Length: 156
Image 1 (cartoon, rainbow, N blue to C red):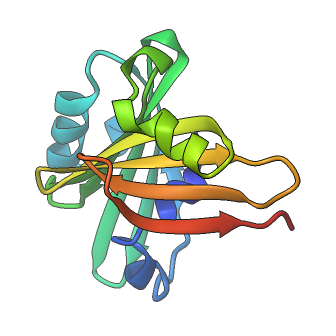
Image 2: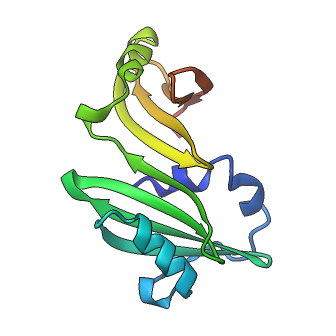
Image 3: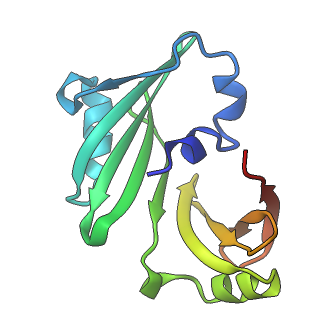
């Protein structure tokens, strides 16, 4: 999974900017019981591949990467007290929102990847659009397809 995209989400940017510990990997059984319970409750019978622990001052966040059937990924973000922050998962091609393909076509590109993020009961979609001869795009939309943010991704 593209861990860099997960870590740069708007929710974590201000927090990570002050991080003393850039994170380390843990086994699930080494996580605090409330964190472990939340991860297991949201893993949807997938295989929990790794858990990243990030300490930010006196706050902690755990990011579990889960392999779902059909080679799909799910990331579960949990605070140290077991509170679910958000989930972010790959969507298979047969479950894409209807607007995804049309948004890519409007921007003269090809839809490469779509992730669904759920936080505080709100769903957003993260669309990666490849464009030939032009910078690729990342769109973030609400559940109706309204574009909330559009970012060009320049190759380094």
